[in-house]
Length: 377
Image 1 (cartoon, rainbow, N blue to C red):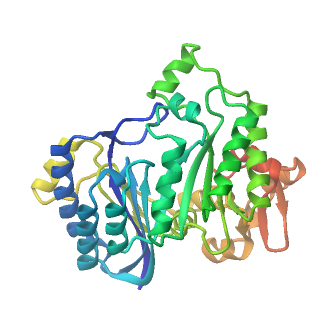
Image 2: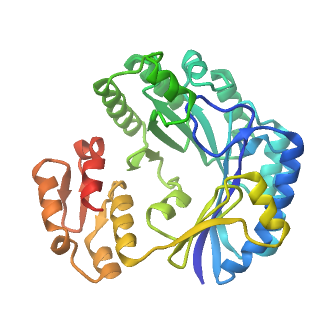
């Protein structure tokens, strides 16, 4: 049986961060209860699609899944085990926000079988956190990590954002120094992106935001790479760093185009060369499940051309790059035959390097990866 990843979306937050364009809404207790019941129904119905697969990674994302009470998480995993075949030791991740965990809830996670915690830290500077609409502070980050470690969680990841409003290079360095003290097993580090429709995008267009310039933002990124690697974190993707043995198996599955099934509002799936996505509107999500239909909004066939483009674009983001042998096995042609012109161009301009087995981004290529990706479309 083939392996598959399972993603479950919890679209609720205590409040929406100023930069967030994910499908999430402020917590509404009656809506949370209704959504959870319908989520379990979809989980059961969708299991028929993956009866020939074994789930080897599970990711509970959001929104803020940790706003659900612990009993709901235990019930969720009871239902997963009833309907899905699981591998012997699946990687099971839940996203949490600092300040939303206590000992009882974390013990429920343990009983449910969760073995990886991903914490939305973003910054260890309280002023920076306020500037982006986060409702936690530095002390709550420390307390949340302590709760997890005290209960035996060793696989803990932290998300960071650099290039925040009014953030200086020394501010980001201070955040890195504080993060290192916490001894996490994995760190994701992203540059701030201003998405249309968010509060921060609106403020930026009105000239109300002071952001680091491009050179400062790149300096922060390079500082992060060097500082994390000095302290034992191996960079394995443009934005992801892990201590030995703690890479995110679920995310690697996405990047390597392994199949995955998404459950919940606005979630996506990729099964048997078909990509489909769920309704983004609660009313439509509930309506379809009420008449025993999966809440699918749309779908597309992933033909060989699209699959190849996605394989190249996602694969080049990983530090190991694109394997020439794996590419030929998948697509039946030589990588340096079909894409020789584009690859040679970017080797010459210093964005790619050619090893015996792989094509990889250089350090400069990581800064300008979009230029490489465009040529793989």
